[in-house]
Image (cartoon, rainbow, N blue to C red; front, top):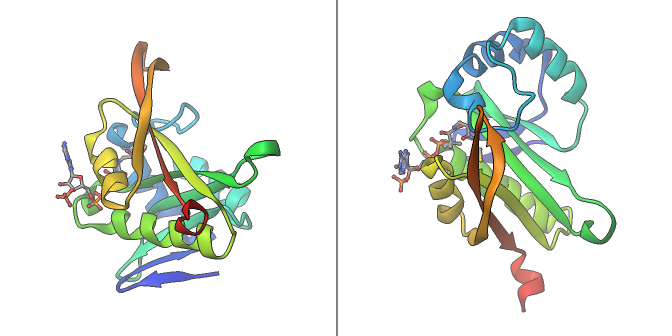
Length: 173
Ligand SMILES: CC(C)(COP(=O)(O)OP(=O)(O)OC[C@H]1O[C@@H](n2cnc3c(N)ncnc32)[C@H](O)[C@@H]1OP(=O)(O)O)[C@@H](O)C(=O)NCCC(=O)NCCS
């Protein structure tokens, strides 16, 4: 499965992405915005075991920009009564920030989730100190539904989390 828009593609992870994943992910400015479990420092072994775990997953895509691996984006289905929802998650390496890459990637995966997977809703949470990610979601038509006050304990402190969601226009009618 490959999703493409211009010079940006979403495709399955490959073992050959490991060195670039390790290089880009080994940056404190990335892990601080993600859930614990994303290691720092981030080693080549971390990259290889992540790729082994997710290279056959239908929920995890590598992001390619001009033919180069630059980051990951995931769309994780929810369960039980939430099975028409999925959670989106993403990161891109710092050398590639502010080029509009993640805005395109989020638009691609959202369209895939609505049109191909029949999802009704895609959501995520963004920590209060991450305006770039909030901006990406707003540019992609996600709506801020609320603030989970002091819900995140990250790096020894409590933070608010902003919750964003987009509804499939087909079910909004
Ligand atoms: C957040 C992240 C995904 C953005 O990716 P990106 O490819 O740089 O995003 P885009 O270029 O598509 O858009 C970024 C937008 O944020 C804006 N922005 C960047 N830094 C900002 C800041 N400090 N304050 C406000 N807006 C900011 C940019 O100007 C741009 O908006 P614009 O197009 O209106 O100018 C990327 O920085 C990243 O991977 N960060 C680390 C991991 C992370 O935060 N993941 C998301 C967890 S919820």
